[in-house]
Image 1 (cartoon, rainbow, N blue to C red):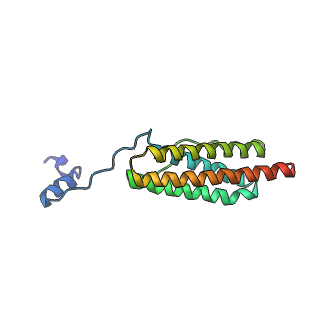
Image 2 (cartoon, helix red, strand yellow):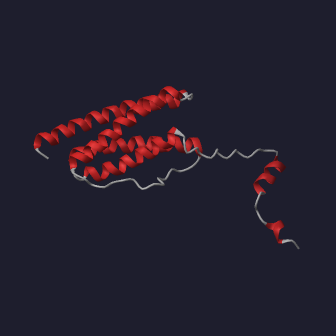
Image 3 (tube, rainbow, N blue to C red):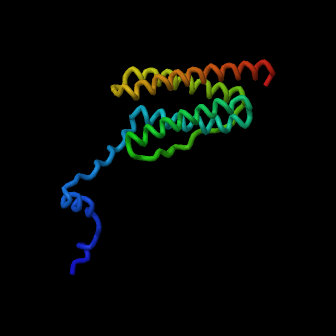
Length: 159
């Protein structure tokens, strides 16, 4: 008796052929150059950075929540596209420098991401994804403006 004949590998394919049905195709492996993946990683890193920063600057908590909302939106789009749950592979930098320098670092990252979203909105062939990128660009631009306001307030108070 051959014990290999009792293994279940490939059973679903054989059963689908017997039943005359097709199995759903597996999602394609994600490309590392996929803009959606890059944005998802950046928003995840930003959320972690802002969580640490919000402990030092109380006015940042609402902005942190908005970053988390953008991350959750991108995470769901990633799952729909690939069928994979996202987990951040790299460790993000949450080193704590002076408060103003950390706020500046966050401002620069969010501003750059707003531009990148706008560029991706123009380049993506998927209309729905392009509209999402355009909306995220606007949200990120507003986020950067709020960060500028917080920076001004900290500067005015001598922080």
